[in-house]
Amino acid sequence: MPAPLAESPLTVLAMRWRAFRAAVIRTWRTSLQFRTVAITVVLSGLAVTIIGGYMSVVIGGNLFSSRRDQVEAEHARATLLAQDYFANAVAADDASQLDFDTLSGDVQTRILSSTTSPGGTGFAMLRVPGQTTQFVMQPTQSRGFSSSVLSDGLRELVVKDSGRVYLQSVTLPSGAPGIVSGSLVSVPSAGNYEFYLVFDLSDAQQTLDFVQQTLAIGLISLVLLIGGVTWVVVRLVVAPIRVAAETSERLAAGQLEQRIPERGEDVIATLARSFNGMADSLQQKITRLAEVSRMQQRFVSDVSHELRTPLTTIRLAGDVIYDQREDFTPTTARTAELLHTQIQRFEILLADLLEISRFDAGAVELELEPVSLVRLVDDALESMRPLADERGSSLELVAKGGYYEVEVDPRRIRRILRNLLGNAIEHGEGKPIVVTIDSNATAIGFTVRDHGIGMTADQLDHVFERFWRADASRQRTIGGTGLGLAIALEDAGLHGGVIEVWSEPGSGTVFRVTLPRTPGAAPGESPLSLTPEDRDNDADAATAVEEVQDAG
Image 1 (cartoon, helix red, strand yellow):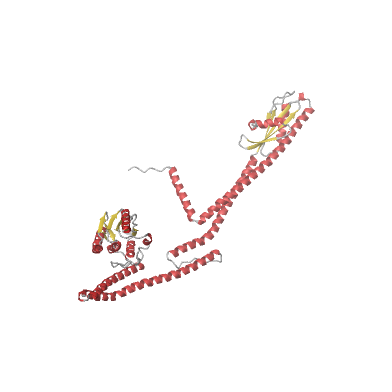
Image 2: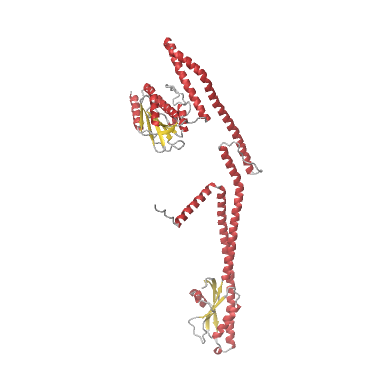
């Protein structure tokens, strides 16, 4: 078997990033405290970044301005010193006897020793080109001076104007920031010379870096402090809200005695007192309603049990009278038949009421056993066939699947089938009734289809209500109690299944029952369609019948 391929570091990194992002998004959505702290930190960070940037720019500008003024003053002083030194030297001695190169070196030494720049100074004196003079002083510059810092624009300005000091910001060969200052110096008998000083601003840059670092540390600390304070404050506010949420969840789960602790006299304490008052009121009402419900259930159960004994006696007496009806007059015989029928219906009604009371009390348990749903449906059809024949409806079974055995309560499934078939026979208008069975990987289901009068959308909303009838003026002719569909719905729910209904006026009705193949599992998608394939044909036939009736 080949070994699994190892994931690349980029793939692992991408997976970790996606997991981290998902965790952050989940925390953002679920935690009010995290969301509040994050928003506060982001906004305060943005604010301090703007303030810190502004302060940094202002401080850097002030430092540069002060050094620029200092450089300009020093260069002006150095220019006067050089001009005076050359003039005095030429005036004291014959120009032909002077060594101008020595004079240039002396001037360089005096100027460099007189400057007070803490970053060091570079010196250069360059002859203005294109001059014709009696004597020539060779250009001179200090060690380490690089002519690359002198731009053509600066040299042109220096040559054109002899009365000003020109400054230019440059980057020194070492990478440090600097300022080049330039002016024009006139040397008697030797002509005009460009005089430049280069000042290293590394000390000012170090000061600015220190200030910026201090600002960054201070502002970051301030943001973290704001975040911490916000976390503490929000925790103080959110903690009671979290307690209230947890308490409300317990109340919703049925723990009616849960309450919020009341501390202090602030708004949170007022909220806790109001919430607890509401919980007390709800507990009293829910307890009262539960007690009323239990009394009603007990009343129905007790009445049903108490009625069984006299009903048994009445049934026995009624059976005796019913068996001797041939000896009575026709009117008395008919009365005996009606008495027999109503006693039977009364017994069924009592049984249904007892079953409903068990459902309401939650005292119903399934008796599961493996059975074939096809066999259960076939048995139910055979038991209901005489009634269907009496009403003129034919019963048909279409078994597409469902032949395997499933764990169900056979008694309850038969009852569901009898109730649905009885409802179809009652409202089927003597037309065919089709029961279809099928199954898939997760569910097994069956449909009961009639072609009767059908129901409107409003009637479908009430079809499973107890004692509800689609047509209040319509009499039940097959002995129904009005509880059959409600009991069928409860029986299907006990199995983890569902009952759904489709109906249209004139197109009949379809009841679909879907049960899980495995007890306790979700049934999933039903194997059968709820909407019948022949609905259009039924609608067309109903329309044709109405047109014929209208024409008649």
